[in-house]
Image 1 (cartoon, rainbow, N blue to C red):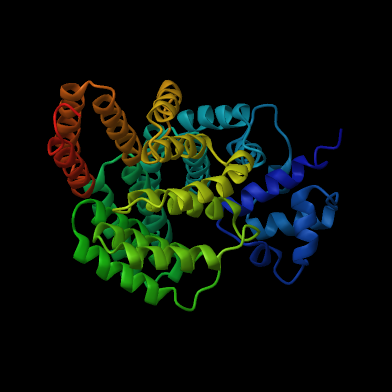
Image 2 (cartoon, helix red, strand yellow):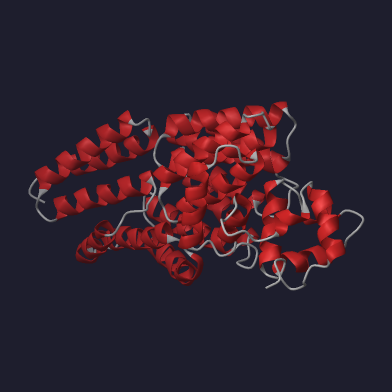
Amino acid sequence: MNALEQPGFGRRLKAMRLARGLSQRSLAGDGMSTGYLSRLESGARPPTKQAVAYLAERLGVSPAEFRETETPSLARAIAEASYGETPEAVTVLDKLVATASDEDPALLWQAHWILAEAKRRHGDHEAEAGYLHRLVELSDEPAVPELQVRARTQLARCRRTLGEMEEARALAAEALGIARENGLSVSDVAAALLVLVSAEAETGRVPDARAHADELRELVGGASGTLQVQALWVAATVCVRQGDYATAQELLQEALGRLDSRDDILLWMRLRLAAASLSLQLPVPRTEAAAAWLDEAEPAVGLVGEPQHRQQLEALRAHLAFSQGRPEQARALYDSVHASDLRLSFRDQVKLEVLHNRLLIHEGRRSEGIAGLRTLAQQVHESSNLDLAAEIWRILADHLAEPSDR
């Protein structure tokens, strides 16, 4: 068997390129077309001796590095895990990373990034955080501003998902400071701002969140792609925290109108779940609108959704059923979600438990439900999720104002 046959050669070539942070254009240089390089990486064209020699020189490796070995190299494991991200390939990569000591830092970076992403996709955010902590360390040895910002931003996003808002805010602020100090790209600055705004809003720093949201929108005003959409989304979230529901709906509607499912179907789906959630948070819930957004999102959830998105859809349907006066269906949906291996974010898990306690009150177990809401509010407040805690206290106050024999 030819040691450089496809598709193995293409996988190893792509892994080496990505590990060095190179685009296809920069690797191809003047001696090769990007189209030919793309076909090599995809396995559509067999490599010639001249192409192998040229690419080896450009990558600073020996041509022998492209060859298969009986013991998987880290570069090969990265390539295997990058193609399809099968559980077996991820497991092999994880084992190699655990025993790596003198590997190329660029390869270690790429490996940890892939492993963190694999854990995120499966909703295992604790494990994801572990890999991201190592990414932060790798980015500081030596200090590479772009990698420092991306590692801290991703870890901040993970910590926010886990409900650790103060740490998320500190990491995002640090990432933003490094990005500004080193004049990094709009996308790097915007990514840090996106997480920072959310963390500030959750920790009760709404004026800071609003100021940073305005800064973000101005920053990405002329940008293409999904940055504008995400900026509008996060600005809408801040307006919700301020109780400005009309502006929040306008911003979210604008975001929804700017994005076609063909541009980014995952973001398109998440926006519709967010729109449904907002519709249910209004002082007078817009249940018909929420139902329509959920119906629109459901096919995409089935097509590209991850475990947490499927649970989020079912949880929102439970909230919708409760708002529409169908507590029995809400209870059945709650039980279904709660019985599974929960992959929801901290905020969504808390809101699901709020629903559970409200259902207890409706079911005649008033003292148990009231006690549960009070305990939940205290725990959330202690975790620095001040906005969410305030929401639970408001719900508790509403129930305490109801006649006890209701």
